[in-house]
Structures are given as structure tokens and as C-alpha cells.
Amino acid sequence: MKNLQEFLRSCSKDEESYKKLIKFTEEIVEEREETKIYLNLLERAIKSDYDSIVITTLQLEEPGPKIVYVNDGFTRMTGYTREEAIGKTPRILQGPKTDRAVLDTLKKRLQEGQSFFGHTVNYRKDGSEFINQWDIHPLTNDEGEITHWVSYQHDITERKRSEKKIVDAEIEFDRLTEESKKTLVDLDVQGNIITSNKAFRDLVGFEDEELKKKKIWNLLDDKQVENFRLKFDKFKPSDFQDTAYELILINKIGHPVEVKVETRLLNIDDQTVVRASFQNKSLQKRIMAMLKQRSNSLDRMFDKSKDFRYRMVKGEQGELVFSDVSNSFSTITGLSETKADQMPWRNLVHEDDAEKVEKHFERVLGGMPNTEQYRIRGASGDYVTVIDYAKPVWNPDNTSVEEVKGSISTEISSESKSKKLQI
Image 1: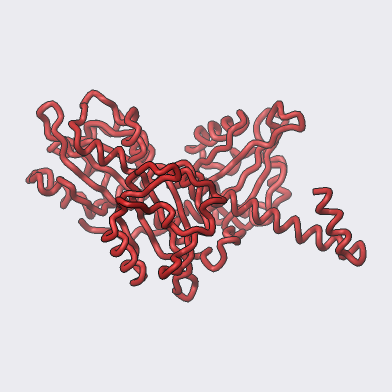
Image 2: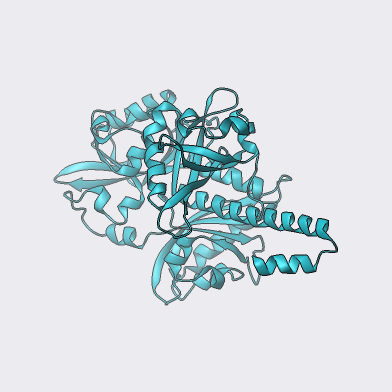
């Protein structure tokens, strides 16, 4: 930083020019940091459904689209570093067993401006094979013009192997490496919930014992209950073997969650079981809407009217209090920056979410960055759902956390009116 200041001073004709350059540089650095935080939020938001995110340029003809962004999941999945991937085309993952027909279909769909869902064999940097499942969507600007492609990717190698094996009924969902990446529930032929994994319980907000007392249609939007109940009353294997549905779940606090459900039949201890895998479409739609709004410039991903930054320190009572907030805090909460100074976080958070927010900050104070979704009181007096990405700020000796620094987004988690989907 000292060398940068010296360079800026050498470029300045006077002290006033120097101050303006310093301010401009600080704004660029801050915006870059905000962009990194927002991309981190995106990655954490989809991690239960996907391993990797890749954003590419529009060009489909030779030499093909260039990669402009990959997340950490991409580097773990493929072995390529960010530096090795940026500027290259996704063809670096292709090899002898990559299905040309799938790639041709992919290209045709994208040329038509459509999304694409499929899978084929890809290759890691070390040459090893894996089966890569893509979920690719176009990003458009305000004029509706496609500017980039975003690809959510998932290594489904183990799933494809497991489809050839008999499922061991004694193995719990949360202990299965591959299955634990998904949001799963097992149902009997009467529609009773037999068991569910943590991802599903987090999605709907119910505990395991609560779910075991419910039929699956008890969790559906009223307009979908009867249709889905009848499917179990007149149970036909063809309705559930490798079948997909789009449904609306109603979570414990009454919020609708659009999901895509893929079902398949298992035979466990001579009992027919319907295993349902859920994808959170509401979250995916919000992410896509956010990316669409930002696609004009991937370097400017923060809308400051919908996000605010904060710092917290321990107050006199030992509880975290706000020590600094950005200007947009007032727009979002209706509280002045002066009012926020030394205000405990509990004054802003919905009382039903206080326990998980406390655990969220405990983790950060323990030295680990963390992301949590909860509700805060908005400017209108109503509560709005936000995603908070917080990280520790260590003391100069690096021996203890002296501050919590975070960024709260209302856009990625704001509840939008869900279009009711019929099965």
C-alpha cells in the first residue's frame, strides 16, 4: 500500500489531486472486495445442489466461449486453478469419451438462447475421468440480449455408480458422501415420510420427528395437495420411477419454496420406497435474477440499495454491537447510522431467528467465516429475509478476533411471489 501511495503521489499535480486519487483507488479496492463477497454468497447458496460455477462469454463458434469466472468448487472438481482456467474455453475438460452428441445438443440449445441440462464424461487436469452434469443458463442485459452463460456443474460419478448397486437400508443419508450433497426424503407407498436428510430438514424447517408424523402432501401448497395425494392413493410405479415434478413446498414459517423433485423407486427390505431428490428452484431463480441484473458488468455485482456492510465489536455487556454501517443501512432498515452506532444486533433480528444468528456470530468470533439466512426488520416495519456473509477481523498479533465484518444482502434472499406450478 505504501508503494501504491508513493506512485499515486508521483502522478498527482498537487495535494488535492492526490487525495482524489487515493479516494478513487480505495473505492475500486472496496468494490473488488464486495464483488468477492457476493460471489462467495452465490457459491454458498448453491453448494448443496452443485459442486461448481462457471461463467463464460457469449461466443459459441471457434475458438468458443472463454471462461471469465470459476469458483473454488471448480478448482477442487477439476484440478485446474483459477489462473489456468480463466481465458480458456470449457473444452479443456473434454476428451476421448466426451459424448459429441451431447455437446452438439448443448450447442444447439445455446444457439437458440435456451437453457441446457445434461451430462457427459469430462476430464480433470490429471487426466482422470468424471461424469459432469451441467445446468446452463443464459444471462441477459436490460435489453434482453444474452451477454454470458452461467453453468452450474455437479460431479455425479458416484451417483451413476451407485445406480448399479443395491442400496443398503442401514446406511443413513447423512453418512453417504454423494447422497449428502442432495436434498433427500424417503417415502413409503402411502406417502408417509420415512426419513429425510439434514438438507431437506433445513429446507422445510421441520425436525426429523415432526416430519415422520406427516404425509408428503402435508408440506405442499394447497392447490397441489389433492393431485399429489391421489398419486399415492392410486399408487402406480410409473408415476415415481425416474419421474420429475415441479412443486411448491410450504416451509414451517409459511413461506413457499419452489422445488424440482426427481423420484425413483428402491426396494429396501422387501418394501417399496420412493426416494425424492429436491432442487430449490426459488433460490436458483433468485440467483439467476441477480446475475441477469448484473450481467452488464460482472465487475459491478453489488447494488448498494439492496445490500449493506457492517462492522461489529463486543459492547459493554459482552454482546456484539454495530460499530460501523454503510450508507445503505438506513435505506434498508429505516434506522439512521447514528441510531445504529452501538446498537445490539438483536434489536434488528426477528426474535424467532435470534438463536441461529447467535450461533452464526459465535462461529465467526471463533475465527471462521460463516453465512446465515435470517430475517431483519425493514424500513416498512415488516421483516425481510436476508443472507449475511460475515468474517472475523483478527487483532494485530493474530491471536484473537477483535471485530466481525460482514455484508448483508436483501436481494439474493428476498421472498418473491412464487408462480404456482401445477403437477
